[in-house]
Length: 111
Image (cartoon, rainbow, N blue to C red):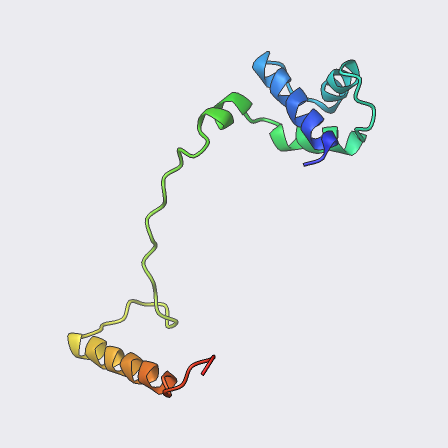
């Protein structure tokens, strides 16, 4: 992370801590007050747009608290659910086993 990004990030955190809206002008004012001159205005604009309408405090408090979503059920290419019988499943397993045995030809990479 560059100094420009860090300075803009810290300025955004300061504004959020004081419950002040994050705008490019306010970010630039804080950065200049900290005597950091090499920050281009694109960084303040990007950060302000990214944080627009978001509560930064809530984002920081909820880091890592998102639970994993449940896996979605799969649908066949035809668009409907498929009817599989245990026999079909057994046949698929046998086919997979055959494929695996074909790959092992008795020699290794470093033999």
